[in-house]
View 1: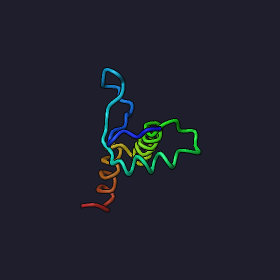
View 2: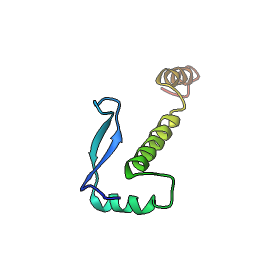
View 3: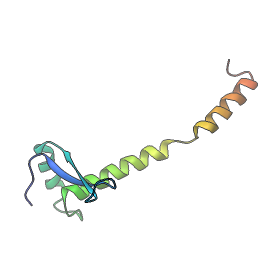
Length: 84
């Protein structure tokens, strides 16, 4: 698989072709290409998309309480005298 200089394609719901170009260093692209050789990933783009989706899911899961819930908790703690 040939590695384009600094460019890979990733899905994007905004663009006309449903992909956007992002730049990554060629050395990183080569490392990814070597990493995915024995995997089910068909391209660097597939791998990068997967990794980014996983990171975003983790970030979403980290929010335990909504802002509204946090404010209610703060109010309750204030009422109990734990917060000023």
